[in-house]
Image 1 (cartoon, rainbow, N blue to C red):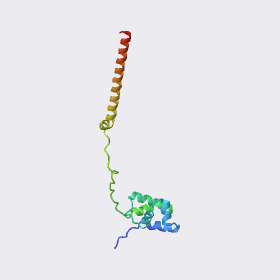
Image 2 (cartoon, rainbow, N blue to C red):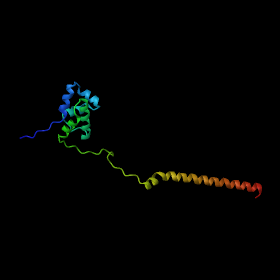
Image 3 (spheres, helix red, strand yellow):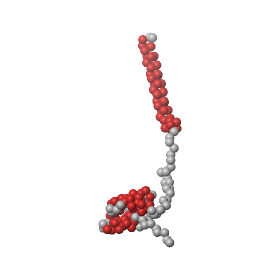
Amino acid sequence: MDAIKPTGPGKRLRSAREAIKLSIDQVAHHLRLERQVIVDIESDHYEEMPRFTFIRGYLRSYARLVDLPADELVLAFDSLSLQEKPIKPVGEFFVVKERPNFKNLLKSQWVPYLLSATVVLLGALVYQSWTQQDLLLMIRTTFGI
């Protein structure tokens, strides 16, 4: 005896869409999805679609649009026992970056600023000292101190 293959939600969604005389393009526009996504849902072809979480959301939105019980359609999708593809990392999107170390942050970013500030401060002190010595010399020569 052959096992009965469960039917996905696609056929019910297509029948409901056709009953209210909506085109695939109208459904795609209303749900803000590509036309091919609607075609794949109605055909129960989920292999090239995004993660199952998104598909369940699409099914719920589509069910609300055509006035079908969303939970039943999601259960019908889950009963298909499909295997979800593993996530493939894309560039650095899934790379966990190391938290910046405070000591390294001080060394790398603030050292040039601290050195610059130190040079400016020393320059100001030398200038002040120099002008103060000239002032003292002038006072001594003027008043004979």
